[in-house]
Length: 146
Image (cartoon, rainbow, N blue to C red; front, side):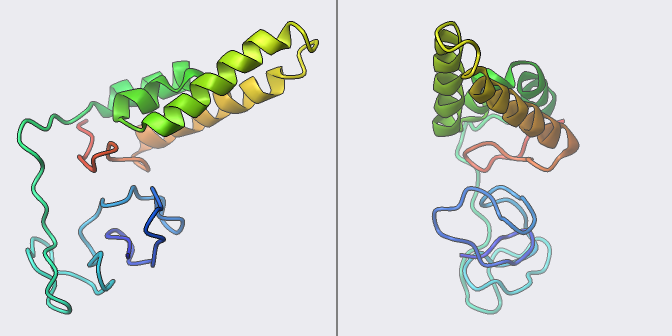
């Protein structure tokens, strides 16, 4: 599989492109099957013939970039922004680590607070990435609205 944004080869299980940071399935510059450059608005890759356009499912609603970004900045350690965008696995990791870190910090004199701090930094960075457009689609590949 290739990144549709930059053409870099990606692992099939990857969620984002390690070269450009675009979410899997976002972008329209390169074919996801062969990595060849595509013309804007093309429905089929001229190199390999694979369909480039996948219509959004009916009733698909775009999520708000501002809401997701602010949730990431202010509640990022709890993973609320990832729940909102549909990235449930990431959200559960953030939620569980923060909750367990909070509970255990009373018994470990705050040592597990480092894990909580890491989750908050992770959420803050993702919130900023959402607000700046580095993360521009939800878990279903639907672009975020401004």
